[in-house]
Amino acid sequence: MYADAIAGMIFIIACLCVLPIVIALLNTRRKMNETEVRKQIVLAAIEKNKETDVEELLKKMAPKQKLLKEKLLSKLLWGCIFSVLGFVIFCCGLWIDWCGGSDPDEIHFLYFCGGVLFAVGLAFIIYYFVGKKILAKEIEAEEKKLMAEANL
Image 1 (cartoon, rainbow, N blue to C red):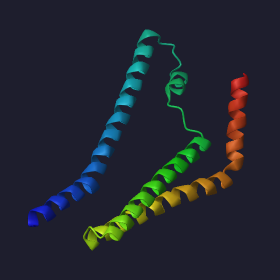
Image 2 (image 1 turned 180 degrees about the horizontal axis):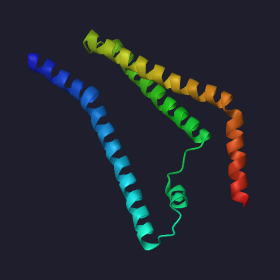
Image 3 (image 1 turned 180 degrees about the vertical axis):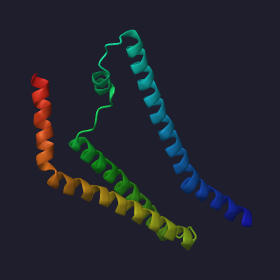
């Protein structure tokens, strides 16, 4: 009996604590590798040609920044994913509750998880619409700038 409870706790701790740490570690390692590669390229360019304009080379090598519109659409996508996932989990809880095949604590956990995911998804969707309204002029200016650069 206690072994099942301990196994469940270990799984929850692994998902909630260890997984985010591993994701952050991998992301940091990826960024450090990208920086190291850029550094090696710049050093090789300087060794080959002493008159190389380093600032211009770094500008060309810098990763492109996402446009405001792309960032907002990313928020909309995540909002839809979280909302649908939360709705599905909540509906699974309702279905299991209706069938009467589980412990009430587990059903309440499904309700809670589904509600939280749905709320996070709604927050992302609200962020998209509010951001779209507030940043309309900036998005239009970015689009005009891109069109001007494309016509050059």
